[in-house]
Amino acid sequence: MIIGAGLSGLTAARALTSRGVSVVVLDKGRRPGGRMATRRLGDATFDHGAQFFTVRSSEFAALLAEWPVREWCRGFSGDDGHPRFISPGGMNSITTQMARGLDVRCEVQVAKLAAVMDGFDAAILTAPVPQSLAMLDERVPELEAIEYDRCLALMVRGAEQGLSEPGAIQTLGEPISWIADNHTKGVSSEPHAITIHAGPEFSLRHWETPEDEVVAQLCTGSYREVKLHRWKFAKPRVLYPERCYRRGNIVFAGDAFGEARVEGAVLSGLAAAEALA
Ligand SMILES: Cc1cc2nc3c(=O)[nH]c(=O)nc-3n(C[C@H](O)[C@H](O)[C@H](O)COP(=O)(O)OP(=O)(O)OC[C@H]3O[C@@H](n4cnc5c(N)ncnc54)[C@H](O)[C@@H]3O)c2cc1C
Image 1 (tube, rainbow, N blue to C red):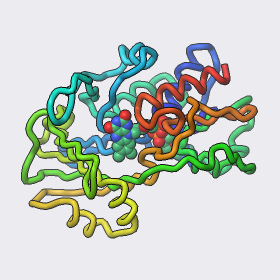
Image 2: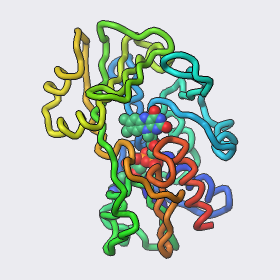
Image 3: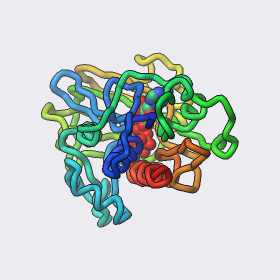
Image 4: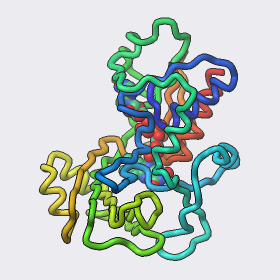
């Protein structure tokens, strides 16, 4: 049993399946992917969760050969030599492909792990850690220090201006940490499809602020349509140092274990599968 059909859950599911283990993946979302999220507004396509990824380990590089990805650029303010990868179909097309052939059951929100464990020997929990801990009856103090930053993400269709190549501005600041033009990036056929990510401080301060006020603060200029997505568990700020954490027949995994990024989620999924296999 695996809870969470994001990158780490799907990676673990594929690794276990390839060893002949029978696996069911449950996810509360309407489709697999988690934070590998792509959304359409009219003819515009937006990556509104993960924006790109880098590859540092040979383990991850080996898996990449099967993924529908291409190099996007080597930096956002000049060439720093490090390739950034994206999927031309949007980041969610990676997880959609990974889910093929697996027994993934979406729109299943697990409130208590015990309630879904019948018939299963073990579980891998890949939801953001506070959500995984809430599924258990007992406490796991070793994981209680893990914390996440929030992110308010705007999808702006028909923005007044697009961005020139490579199509992104990475400020890592406040109130805006990231702006990307999904058309220049090669993801949206419709031009001027802009993703804006607020920084963690702004996102926390304006978590309860009504959508129109958030839009007014982050988006200047005219646009055709805008949508706000609130990522409560966007990026782990306090991590667990190992790739996964095992307690009896339960393994915790995800991007809070080791590295808070796409590659970290994948390597954690592999480690979780290894821990159970
Ligand atoms: C705004 C934003 C920008 C980002 N940008 C980048 C980037 O540019 N580069 C990069 O490398 N990384 C980036 N990341 C981080 C990257 O997206 C994550 O590291 C990675 O996708 C995490 O995968 P995961 O499988 O660990 O978790 P998730 O993708 O969160 O998967 C967990 C799954 O668990 C499911 N779930 C939760 N609770 C339950 C429940 N009770 N019952 C059933 N299912 C449940 C969720 O629906 C979800 O699908 C970004 C993230 C965000 C939010």
